[in-house]
Image (cartoon, rainbow, N blue to C red; front, side):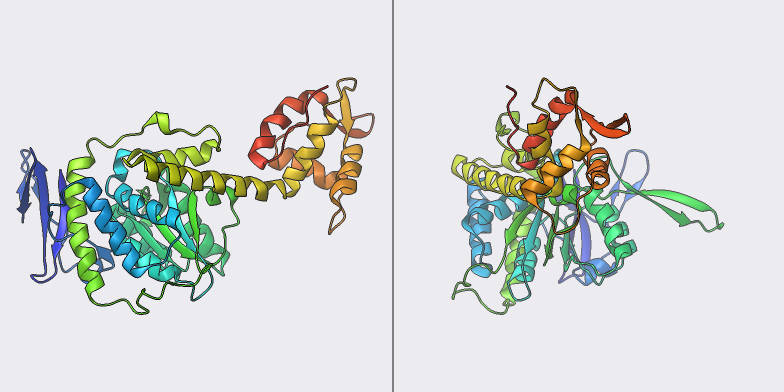
Length: 410
């Protein structure tokens, strides 16, 4: 197993190897096939300017519990987070160093208004993550694709709010494809012979973002574990400006985390017993990898409780959408076994009566929601669009996803 390390004082990169419990540093490694493996040069612009943060050399950390304690102390010195998110952030750092042992990953998000401390938290947490790559909303998309594909590390992204749709669409591709293994982003380059050359860019890996608002894509939103910043007075002991020693502390911890990676990545695996049937399958998908690397049962319980709160808030938010409201109406009207169909006009009248509307609600609008958003069946009979009673099963299956209680059959 090989990892890239960088010694700033000597301006030198090397390859750290781990075999049979021993660590060795190499300038060059000759493979049995005659190939020579060399590290990315220390003159690389991203490494030299600390855009990509690397360890210097593996260092002993004692037990995993001791390493966790050091990370928690480091975070506590420089950022103010909720107690649950302290545990989440600490173990997300560990997860980033063994992420390639898993097939799905969660993302972390720090959300708040200017001055809420989200950028500070992003820097402090990101400085400990595996081969962290720091970028901001001012960056263009092409170097982000190339850097993620080259280093395969943790994407640390500040100011993830975009004014222009083309920028947003390109970055959303990275976030949509980047939490599940096996979904590279395909882009076309021009070869030296002026020929089109399709290339696959690997974007799978941990990601931490700071932003003021939410993404419009609900599927993308469900990939994030979010900390709302600025909702409590900042602790008086947190320095207003990061001291110079913070970078040295982060480097020392990255060195220990590199040895943790060498020892743990081979044994890290999903623990199926940690699946929580009270929350959505998507939340389980992203949360179980994080829970699987946590040994402390109390920390696991705190994170699970925070996840349940998050899941309920997402359901409450969905229940207030037009889709959630429509499901509530459908579940009730389709519960009448004496009928074969329910006219769309009746569904519309019940919707308007119960929920009102800031704009006119028409059968055409609700029919569109039925077909394109909820993927339910409606058809025209005797000049009237109707929903068949048989759709009750599908409607009741969709209800929990939107935080709606299905109406019982008589």
